[in-house]
Length: 96
Length: 479
Image (cartoon, rainbow over all chains, first blue to last red; front, side):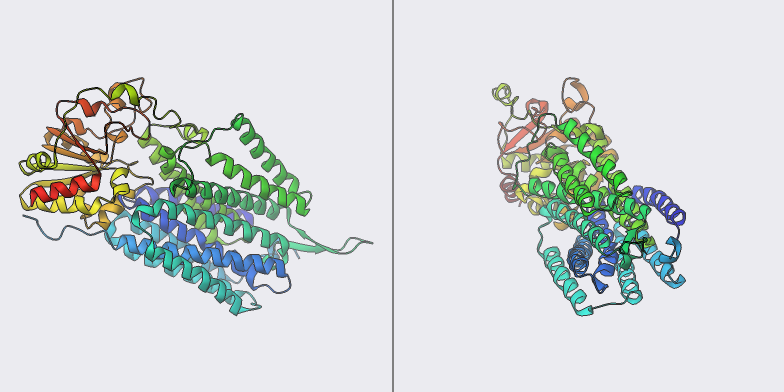
């Protein structure tokens, strides 16, 4: 992919992000932060490339360390988000 | 090998990363409503799985065991933390997670610098009469430099934010002399170095970019006081996104670019919402120093007359009410009083009282923090209202029960032009027939360091004591 294609995707994604995030209900702003933590760890893709490559031990170990750090975020971020979201409940029927 | 050829990937790979990116958009879209949010989160997990599997499937792997080992170790730590963490400690956890994204970006950037051929961002050049070497594309150098710089700022900034939120470091701002000059100079130096990096890919240049960025992240956050933490944590959220996006540019990876843009906008919007809720400009928050004058107004306030009530008085007033609005703040979280508050609300509802909750956007230490705490205490989310949705109701409310919130209820924001919080939108609790204000003692002031006129009003009754104990006593009196 050339630079302009990537840049186009980036700019459009910024606009998508703008509208999607404004539509998030304020009650869920904390889960929003924890889930954005999880998804920004898609940086693990870069870490995996470095960790998988043969021949450059320094780069490989940095990659493995990055894989571990990103994994903390991916698993921790999604899990804690799920835990929080499962707490949000509607009123159980009409009270008194 | 040309630059385009180096990045050539089969169409299905590009498509897979695009699908992963779309999954992440849907994950955020789901958060528009608590009902759809759980499905959204699962979609996010699917997106992440697609991205990881695609990467592993399209790169020759020297040792899968090591990679799985790293994922198991990291994932295990993440899962255990996610299960054990107290909901009151969410701000610290999020700050810690931000720092990890930042560090991962620095590590990936450094790995790409050390082994650029693996990332397809370099060519081997063989000049006449000298040994061949690997030259990183100039454009990739800029992207890499930016990614490492933003990642490093995110890391060190988040570490400081974590220490402040976790109480390892005082929430008071630390103000260095000439800090604006130092900060601007360092930022300029980083940008110049990234420019120079396109000419010279020497390790010293790369190392300096990283080192200065670590330093500036630290310098940017230490002058920011505890009250501004909701902005800081949102801002760092934004940075972690931009770091991911910059690495996405380096690797020409659409999933990373889309995610980075989403997270970057998300953090930016949250920062904006937080700033607006405090009536502060983003620049003034970044400049820091807010809250440094705390404790100056205390002495003068102490001997003013106020009405003090007991738990029994409060229970009586609330049980006679038609509508009670509970206004929680960070103090409720600190005292872990949310469960007692819900019990109190249940008893009142059983007596036919309508109970609602009013939440100020900056109540707590991060956006939406109070909502999570109330949800944890089994408060139905449709009883919880945002400031603009409920503020007009206080005038028709019999009792406002303010627990652990102070600055966000201070009428000075509306009528005292000299007040540091003048102009900040506040909850109109004084318009309720009676305002019950739970507070540890009359001495302390809120984070903004100012006295609250509300304490001395005729329709205010102060309930002095620990937020949890006081609420539990009210529960006893109601039962």
